[in-house]
Length: 237
Image 1 (cartoon, rainbow, N blue to C red):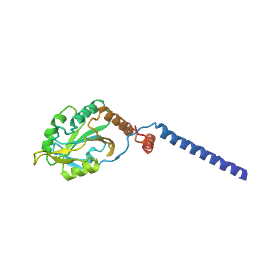
Image 2: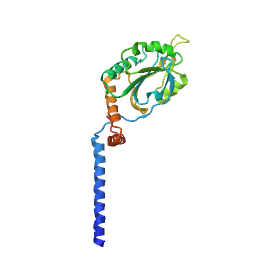
Image 3: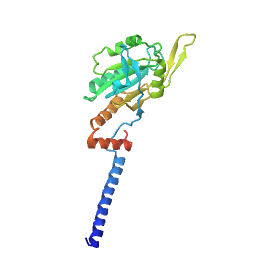
Image 4: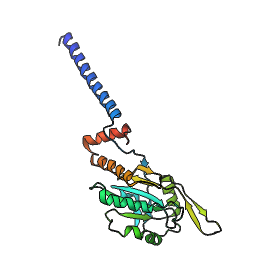
């Protein structure tokens, strides 16, 4: 091949390479700026555990794989000034059953912060007004277990810290001091949203569920690459 043609061919390939590179850079910049796909952040892995529910049945973190799971934390003796979030969980459960996207499995989990007193039998009485409804399509477990393991799971895994406080003029009675927290975990066992508030709105949870269901339904193929890019460029709502 004549030297002139070799040089021309070389420059043609270089030209195509630079055009491709420019298109790639332009696409990356456009994706980062315009954020055509929105995702919830992948905060961290949710903690693993093995506890017992209100029916005396074993429940582990693996039982909730493949489900969008909302957690809250309270205890059966929570009253008065205690920030009990159980009523809010029931409200969210009703909304999920009525309006959340179909084709997705959901679950609710309430973890007792007082496992020494909250036996499965006591939790069964506490849970009865909430779980004996027509909302069984959204299962709800109330969990208790070894106090040290609960503290590792709640404090170490979900970073919710709580402590016992002896009641005035009492020697054997106490209450649990804690700040209300809800946590949304996806089917891969990753924490996707945290709500450190007693005034969580149903709309906020349903909006986040919608983001997650769209991502789940587009998690494979070319669409899956777009969602991975959205995580890379922190395209958060």
